[in-house]
Image (cartoon, rainbow, N blue to C red):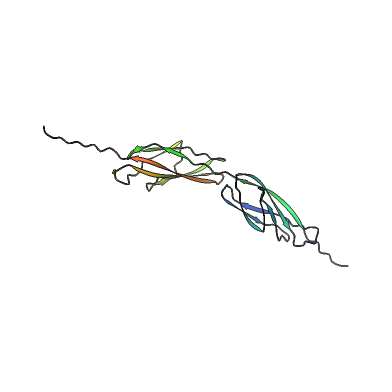
Length: 193
């Protein structure tokens, strides 16, 4: 009687990280039973090999990712097994706003025109370009009184940045110029006839 070793069929399993277009996706092979050189089909007509691989998706969408676990025992009948998982690549939100032109000391209205592109906008962060920032949620606008950084000596353009993030973990930002005008200065002289 001789002992015959019967290797187990590889049990493929992997996890991925990433949620949004523009992010690198990390695929990590966590298969059991002698997986040496897994092969990957990322579902977008691109392929890879290795236990831990990265991939960059060019477009948002839903992709079927296949990973084939390869046994170290190539002469056995249990050389490979495949697992398929769905990977969703979410689009980025589109931040946007408009602002009215006001004079120093008057609140400017910044009207939100952002689009979530999936999910909903869960976070707003404003940097007003005058040394102040906050996380005001537009409803449908926010008001801000710009600090007079030049002490009334001329019109000033502030580069206002809006950062938004969705509940899906995707974020984006935009910077727009906002003009704040110098207040008029009343003055007169009187001279005798």
